[in-house]
Length: 154
Image (cartoon, rainbow, N blue to C red; front, side):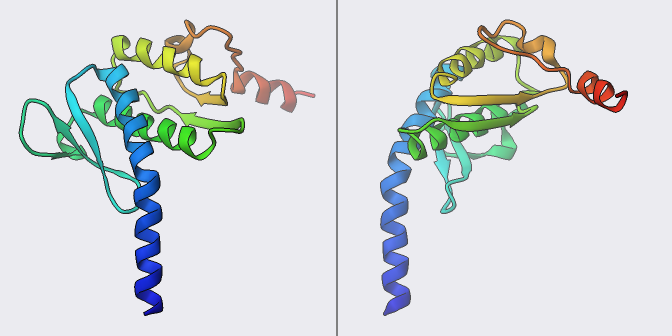
């Protein structure tokens, strides 16, 4: 009885937060990719498990889409989780070269989303391709290799 009660309560909690996360993640993905997808599917751990393209009647696994689209889905879910979980407090969001396969058109859309999110979150973006992010307004760039060399040279 205890196991069933805990399982039921967990399911209720997950359902109550999954709705807002799904709604927010789909909105972010639509801003990036347009109306190509109907929605992101989630597993019981709130991880994206599939996507519903408008061109087919069934959900496809994330392994069946391009690397860039997969990056964008995971980004949309991360930002949605941060929005829903920390809507009232400023938090740190760290992204480590998450847009390696994303094309420049969609990267420009993501830059807009990052700029807007910077009002709510402190965003640290680690990358080997800083030139891709030079257009982000109000951004401060740090060359970690130079910082390490300078500190080691003292």
